[in-house]
Amino acid sequence: MMIVLMLLIIGCFMCLFRVAMGPTPADRSVAIDTIGVMVVGICAIFGIVTGQDFYLNVAIAWALLAFIGTLALSKFLEGRGFDE
Image (cartoon, rainbow, N blue to C red; front, side, top):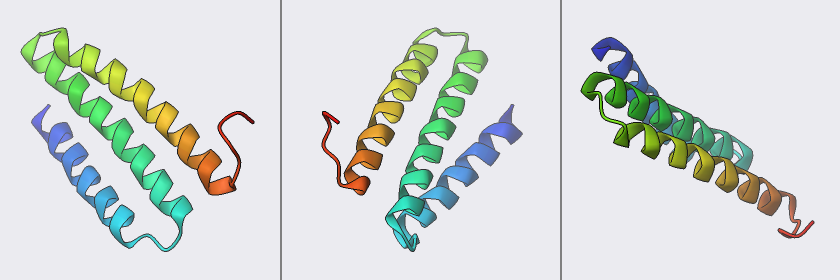
């Protein structure tokens, strides 16, 4: 479990680098979405290791917010409104 956790944390830092240095806004958007997926994985691992349901609830909420945020950012990058 610790190896997977360390790999996810390293992946998050690599995505943070892509967010900071990404050549296009689309690259940054994909990196932010990937960070959200990795954070959900980290929360799931914490939930399994500790045996507490709280981390799984946080993971579900984070996944929903990351999905909605990705949709909003993609619509913004296209130049469309939220009602279209």
